[in-house]
Image (cartoon, rainbow, N blue to C red; front, top):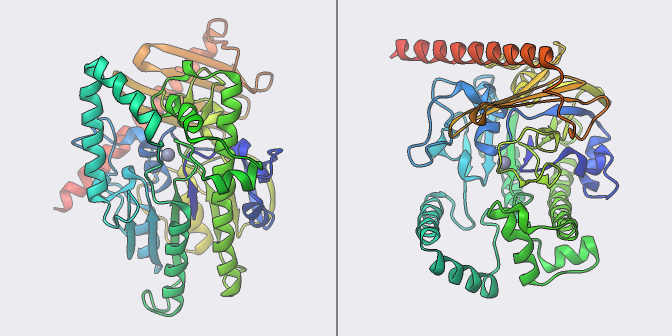
Length: 444
Ligand SMILES: [Zn+2]
C-alpha cells in the first residue's frame, strides 16, 4: 500500500490530469480498479490516518497528544490495519516519514518492522521531532516580538532555502526495496505473505523540487529566492500573499514533486516485476488528503475545509477486476477491502464497510479549537457543518462541481435533514468508540 501525502486526485494523470505527472503509477493503474470517487475522512494527516490505518472515524477519538493538544492519537483500544494483517498471518512492514504517524501517536502497533523516521538520517525520529518542537516554540516567541520576527524572516529568505524536512522519496524507496528483498530471502516473516505500507511526504508543502527535478519535468528551474517566495505563504498560511501567476508557479512545483515521487515508485514496481512478485501483488495507491490552490481562498491544507480538492483522493487497487469505477468509496473502508481480498479476518471494531456494500454517502470530519467540523458527501450533494464558527454550507454538485454556490440559505429543509444526519453519525461513532474503550478496560 502506497500513500502519498497531500496528493489531489485531479493532479494524477491516471485520473485524467492533462499533465503527465504519474507515468509509472499510470501503468499500474491500467492493471487496476480505478476509483474516481474516493474520499478521505479528513483533510490533514493526523485525522485522516485514524481512518486509513485505524479504520475509525476521526471524531471517534478523544485522546490527544500531550504536546500537540489538538492532534489526535490512535488510542490503544482502537484496532489498526497492521494488526489485522499480522493476526491474519502476514509479515508486516511500515515505512513512513510523517511526525504525526510515529509511535508518539500510537501508529507503531502491529508491525514486524516499523521505520519511524521524521527526518533524514534520523532513524528513530525522536531528535528531529524534538528539534521541530524547539523551532516551533522559538518562532512562537519571535512572533510575539514582531520587529525581531521580521528581521529573522528577511534574513531567512535571503540566506536559507525552505526545506522539506521529511525523508525524501529515494531513501524511502530504498528502504521499501530492502524490506522486500530481506523478506524474499527469508530474513524475516519466513513463509508468510508480506503487507508493506510506504508513506511518501515529497508532495507535502513546502514544494521544493531540486534543480534537476525541475529541469526534468518543467524544462527549466527557478531561483532559491523565488522558491522561498512561493512557499512562504504556503507554510505560514498566508494565501493573501499569492496572486494567480504565483499560484501557477506553485502548481508547477507541486506537479514536479508528484512526478519525481512517481519516478521513485517506478523503481519499486520494477523490483516487484524483477522478483516475479508483481502479478500476484495487491497494489494500492492513494493519499491522505489533497491541497488547496486558492479555489476557496486558501492554500495547502490548513484551514479545516472539506471541499473536493481536499477530500477527493486518488485511489486504485490492483487485484480487483480492472477498469474505472465511479461508485462512492471511503478510505476508511481500505482495511476491510484488503481483508476480504486476502481472506484475512476483518479486525473487530472498525467503522468502514467492504466492497460488497454500496455506499450512498461518505463522511469527513475533524475537531478544531472551538468545535468539530463535519461534512457529508453523496454522489450529487455536499453539506459542510463548521460547528466551530456556526456556519453551514450546501452544494449541488450536479450543477456546481467546483462548490462555488452555497445553497444553505435557500434549501433550509435539506440543511435541517443533513444536520440531523451528521448529528446521528457523530453520536453513533462516539458511542461505538466508547464501548470499545470500555471493552478494552474490562480486559485489564
Ligand atoms: Zn497529510
